[in-house]
Length: 194
Image (cartoon, rainbow, N blue to C red):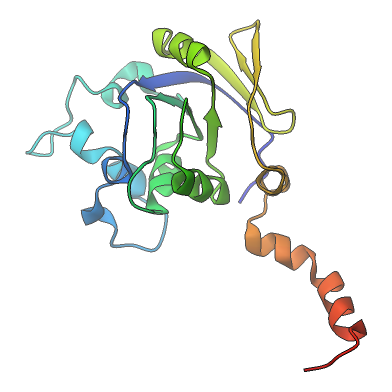
């Protein structure tokens, strides 16, 4: 995982509420344990018709969405079953963050562990972002500040452990590996031995 301090991008908007993990990546595509190639199946049943052709009316299929790395989604994004493939598919497609008023806990945890940034904002900020697709947004992980355009700044929550891991480009295992000397010292100096 690479260190993530800031993401700056135009937004792409999917205003639908209650987008679940099966909509993000349908279960029939969960046959792999690697991340590579999952982006092609992102929102598959929304992006494609029953014959597999791209739908012109789905925002991610439009030229305006090209290069956008920040998704603004409706309320309750990532609900449904626990599926690490969901953030994998979003990342493989080229998205790096999602902004919503509510993000499901399991999805949020899976996202943070994989370097995909979930940002929760208030209703007024969310309404503004929904009404202004394509606006430039900066997500500053270190300062925990969301900057919209040139003059709107809003703080957003992120737990300190996830923030540390994102800023240092490590996952949970990487964090444990950083503690090897302290673990060895504890093992060596504890008063009882197994």
